[in-house]
Length: 143
Image (cartoon, rainbow, N blue to C red; front, side, top):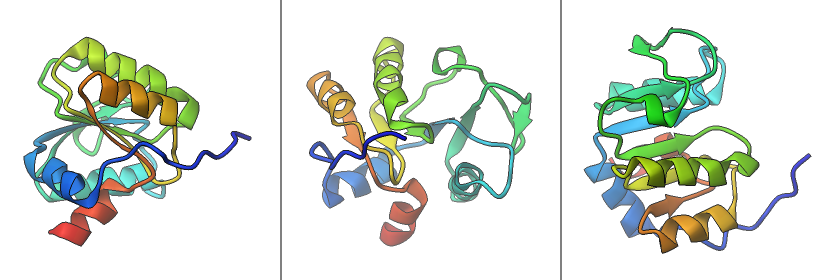
């Protein structure tokens, strides 16, 4: 079991609202095809409120009517936000992949996922970084 960290690096309410307002496209890392899973429910909600989603998952060809990609770098369109539904230990590699792409503005680690080291790297490299918040819950809170 991974040790829990307290989130010391995070965006504030004003930044979170602005991120959700400005984001158009979201790559969802770990989007499960299983409708019972949080990643599936959140992605379906984000899709229903107008975001274009890109599922990133090791299996499947289509989830929620969208083509599934094996990695962030495979997505041929612009990605504004990367939403992470994986273990905290994976967040650093997601930040690095986001920086390699050059078009990602925000890395968002879902509720319960905290990696302060990845957050520091993201912020130091000019990315916005949110952790331990749910994109769906925050969207409902502001809109």
